[in-house]
Image (cartoon, rainbow, N blue to C red; front, side):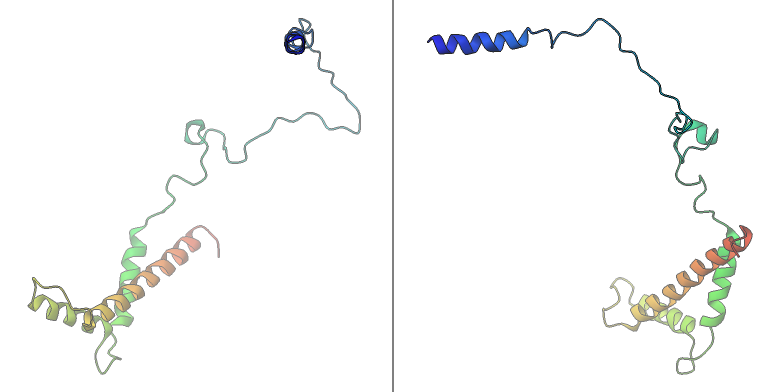
Length: 148
């Protein structure tokens, strides 16, 4: 019983020691200056541009897509021209794609079968179109922003 009281008084004694009370004397920061030490620099955020976006941090420009209708127009024309050349058994890719659309619309309420040629022409035509639009966007914007 005496051991329990002694350990309890020891714990209470540690809680009230002078180490746990806050010091009333404010800490003085010493600043060292030397020819070898740099002057203190405040940390800056490299993403923050002064006055941009009302002081908010922005990583991308507001108009990051930089949409331009010239790219869409020229890209569509740039894809329709080569895809309309008759190289697949005397027919063009565009002609085959549009013919397959007409064939599938003939039995409209039912969807195209998985073995239908429509899916092949759909994927090939749109893949070519999106590649042409992507390279058109890269080339047109690269030229206007002086990348090359």
